[in-house]
Amino acid sequence: MILDNIHNHYESLVYEEIQRRLAAEKGGGFTDNALEDVACLALNHLPARYVRHSVDIAFYLTPKERADMDQQVLDAVAAAFDLVILHPHQD
Image (tube, rainbow, N blue to C red; front, top):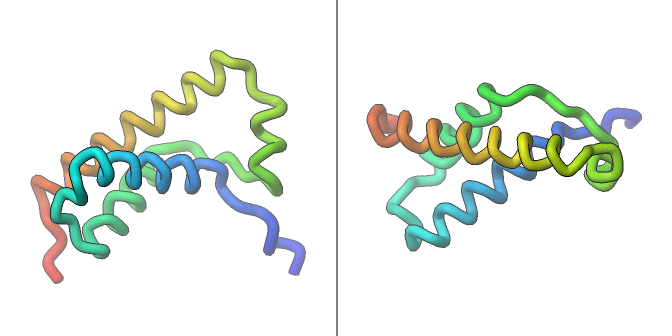
């Protein structure tokens, strides 16, 4: 299908940041449901940036735009973790 190759570039950045934070905190005791909540909350606070290939966006971004994008992801994921910790998902 034509849409199979299209994705939101922020998804992979958010997933990578979640994994980085979990590795730094040795897992942090979060359930899969809680991590899904973190990912959804973070992505809902970021703009959609749809691409066919992630390399496409890397080619067109200036270093400042890339740094801004990285900071937005860090901020969104940090805020999402804080919110999930304050209001845990009831399984």
